[in-house]
Length: 87
View: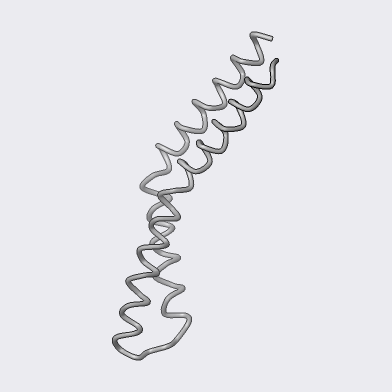
């Protein structure tokens, strides 16, 4: 296995990790931003108000995107095993 192949595998693994984590991170970012704007406009500075909706939204995002995330992970794992098989 050459250095180019190893770098390609590392790059692909980082890309798959970002692709799998992005729906959850974007959901948390959007919900946190909306809650932050609402807290600023209403002058309510309670930290738990931001935590609970973000937690619920992350859970919903995981439920919605779980099948896609699992398919992406299994496809990547299958590709890695096929690469190992070729060696």
